[in-house]
Length: 501
Image (cartoon, rainbow, N blue to C red; front, top):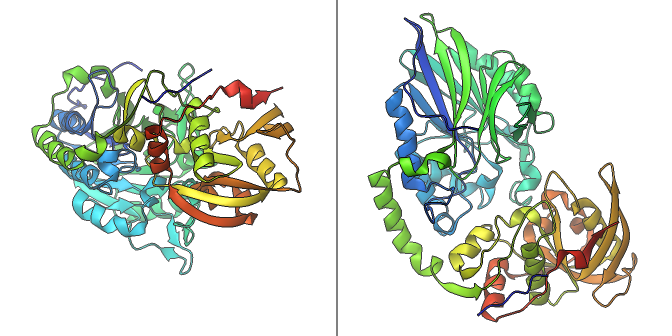
């Protein structure tokens, strides 16, 4: 065995009603599905593709005047999806009948050459009006800026936008030739064009982050993105990226976000009069995971998922370890899983220090059997070990950027003990010691390993760009599996290596 020592209410699906002579147009959205095709148990909050598809079809049956869109990050996140480069998730999107998908930052994880096949399989376009080719200063040719759809005589336009954070929240080398222009300025240019094209309703489908205070219901946008609500002609905003449930108004514009992994659906309901003028716009959420037992499986989707499941089962079901204790993970703190992963990286690369980003680990590990399927969910990104020679000063720059970083999550590390203090978001390092107790020397050089995402400046870890790069080695997920098979025992008590004064 592998031993680790570790010191909103449900919105029911109801028919839409409008005043006599008026119509109700519903736009159902989901976001950050991340290839979550399977549900592990009845208590698992994830619906799985079969129930998720059926839940959306419930909404369509309740109101035939329904359009469905995705706000991005559809594919990367589970072994069943990753092993086939998102094909099963794209097929699910076709089964739903999605009108369009915004481009999430993780749509770029496997390179831009995947977009064409995804669109063919989805039967729907990607939309992203602010995605430009740096060399030509023209929109990229693998996405559309918007789509326009007529439903029951009402013309609905959906404008796609992608967070500028994509420049550093996916592998920077993949998007090096792409510019993510200001979404607000892009919307100011594009919404009048859509109105001129005859749109009665204009909805922004944006892979940008929002959150909502559950007491006051106040909505907060990703930095600078609140300006989307002030663009004239915008009737509603669908958001994503931050994995939150959001349903409310900002500057009197309805704003929604549907959690993540298919656990929730968001809805914007527009009542229009006989002249197709918007009379009212109402946001709401259908928190599917709270009524999971009531949702039937969509039979065709269930059969498709079983076919895909049989293809990948030998890999997913391979048991690599068994543990009597779990490895918890929270991306915003230094976690037991983060420390253990860093230690595996450090030993695999024969390095003194290891770093990995908190957001690169997507969930913890529970006690019991650990399969390769679990490891794919823990680390869905196909990152490899990148080795550097770094000065103590460069290492400290990684720590000051990564500790208590509310935007990207906390950096995970091993091989050093850190004492620090913080004030107003500024990190001060009081002591950084190597495993042997010696203080880190700013001018001395050390062998450091990280992942190839951080190595190219991902999550803003730019100090690697000026360090002495020594090369890449094996996939981190494979290193984790090998460590587990080898029955490595690691002590990962957080307080031993990170102390806040």
